[in-house]
Length: 292
Length: 194
Image (cartoon, rainbow over all chains, first blue to last red):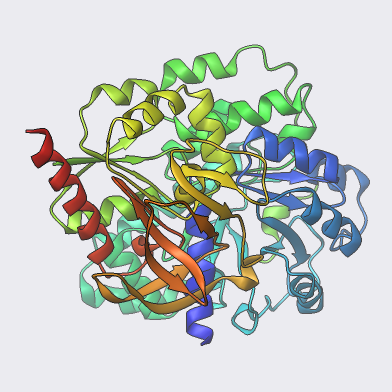
């Protein structure tokens, strides 16, 4: 039965592919996101850029606010809990959230253990910087992976770095001899079955999205061409000059990520992009949270 | 035989894999210029109907595809595809291709906690694995629509002429029989045309 639930949860992630998941902080923003073509929304009190600016401890959002967003839209609604905070995850499951993001954007609640996600009925998505991290999260029960990137910066460099690292390791494992897989599993600290899956299928056993720093249609197309199966856009939309237009353009860019002529049209006249900050300028690297 | 798979959003690659396992060529339909490549049938995959419907409209694919379906192009819609083909959606005022005389209910089993796996019988194909993900069902059908499968008293698969819909996702399981059934529909349509 639990096995079956995990399959259903991985299946939901498959349905999100080729889509854009947008951060929203109110029912109004959720409606704008749905109308712009979001395949799901991430309900949170503050977008990462504001979490970064505010400092302090960032926690799960108010369930009332999440419920209002669930009522406002018909697409799947996701919400974040802190790394290792299984009680927050239990609360999110109790309000029938469609997906839980065990997220480094919030302050980690446990600096050693992630949530045992196999004990939950609802699916989890987790961030990863490389293949080892992705497979460790999957072995804990994650149904979907996203790059960590560097949230709230509008700087795509780290999402690119993480996606390239993952794809390079997948290629490397794909070309290994069978008897080399055991040592790789030991190095990555993951079950050999997961390494064998990557070896045979040349991909992760779950859907893999890009996240963290995507701000323009070109950013989205870049991540898709690097092998992402869809894109999360956090601060990039509602921190920009014309959220509805930018959101719709990013949705189309994800569908036709190889059509440069269309991408040129989509990139026109979008108003001001989020200002963004460089990774050298930020004091807190969220991607460094929860690596083990 | 070449079957196009609408590749705007959702689980289109899964359908392409099923077709390839059957030895059928699949092409992706992402933009208007893709319509120039001839195809004999069309699959509309699972995903979010709001996203696919909006992109169909804005990429100027909605009207040309509707015309082709009205002219007899065999089409197979799963989950979101069913919603896009339905004449009406009971709990949603949006409609899209609206070529099939069925009334659907969206997210009919609730949120992800309501997603389920079931093995049930499909007319002519016997018992099949059926995976329902935030699935719709068919509330009512008009005359001329053949009911192919039911689950818990709700209609979950139907056919009207050259249009086939399932509320579940045959592309997520290994059983190829629903895709083979659709390929037969396409073959029969080709034979009539020749």
